[in-house]
Image (cartoon, rainbow, N blue to C red):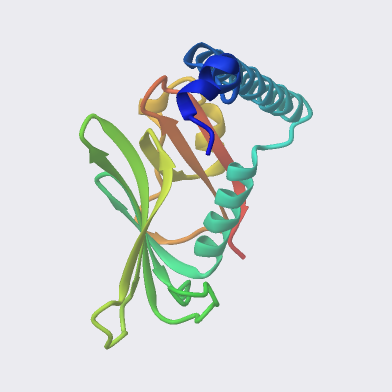
Amino acid sequence: MINFRQHLRKNPGRLSSSGLTLVELLAATVLATLLMGAVLGLLTSLTRNQRTILKSHGIPDPWQTQLQELFEWDLQNSRTLRAIPNGFQLEGFAGRDFSTGTPLHCPCRITYEIVEDEDRQHLIRRETHTESLNLENTTSALVCLDIGQVVCGAPRAAAESENYPSSLQGLPDGVLPEQVSVTLVSSIDGRMVFFRNLTIR
């Protein structure tokens, strides 16, 4: 049997050459971190450039397209509108299955309302099936972050008030007209996003 100490004396460098030293491991970690940072920076730059190109060609962001489709569905399947302190409320038949999203066209109340979360404000959509006997007849969903005001108004009123958030005029309570516009006002910089001329009928 070979003595382990004698083996180490004859081959002093063999044990130290197997594996990474702490310095090499640290260098590899730093290099990997730098590479990850470069890749993330490149992806962020590409995303920003893509948004700029889309906006220059008049193409809305994907979230705006999805939100417009949601507004149109709710408005087209509602009959009346009522203003509430931080938003508006629709009554009609826009109800969908909470799990699958399948249209049910059941009596439904849709509420778009600004809610506060600590020092931020967000737009929430609440759907209530008014004639459901199920105790879980209401669902809520976050629609948009950092929204300080939402107004369901006439198309002309929204278009004329681009620089004056406080002057936006909502529609009066009652039957919905043939076309409306929904305006979102950012709670951060006051920037407006318009969903103009949404057709009801």
